[in-house]
Length: 265
DNA sequence: AGTTGTGTTGAAGA
DNA sequence: ATCTTCAACACAAC
Image (tube, rainbow, N blue to C red):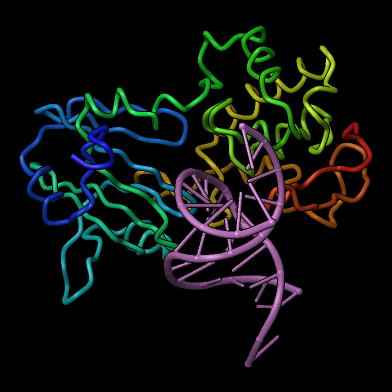
């Protein structure tokens, strides 16, 4: 036990290997930006990919110091799939791997019970695409949090799962200025944000994510959200809706991209 | 060639 | 308490 006995996180790699070996994956689930693997014997593997991490499924073999993908395709060819830091061999010869350029990703082995009771999980807000997350609940969640709408949308304790790309895209679709305070939002504004949130996130899932940088799916393949991206990283380009020039500002250390003309302040 | 920016989060400082 | 800044790291683009 560590950290006041609340959790049984394993930070030591030797112990990690010993503890995880031989356990069966019983269930894989997600909460916000966290992925969980429930394992036999009451353990749960927590994966947070952070900025540049992504899980891969395939087969690799070690050549010298380097692990190389056995089959042809993106696992072998795409450089973004070659920042391997952890490989978990499964019993059928396949492997689960983590590729992470910047090495921020987090992988921890928890006691399932400790995880369920943890502050970490309890602190997560609503699931944006859950059918039970109605407009009414959305309004309530936002009413409780004062602040600039972009920052509130990205606050994982309010809504779990929205990051910098999709918050910009949601606010563009909803025609709301990123610095607008939540207290000033009226019913129709909130409605547009709610609908845009559902629409953009569903689209992002459908298009399998944004891969202009390093994100790849489990097979190492790129997603296509980039073809749908309207404002994020489009500073200096024309707004696809009104033609004004897209701006970028700093908001709490993150960059916010928006159209200064058709997003209402 | 040095500086700035990058999808996240949590810790430290004010 | 609550906000802002910075660090973890590696690389691309200005």
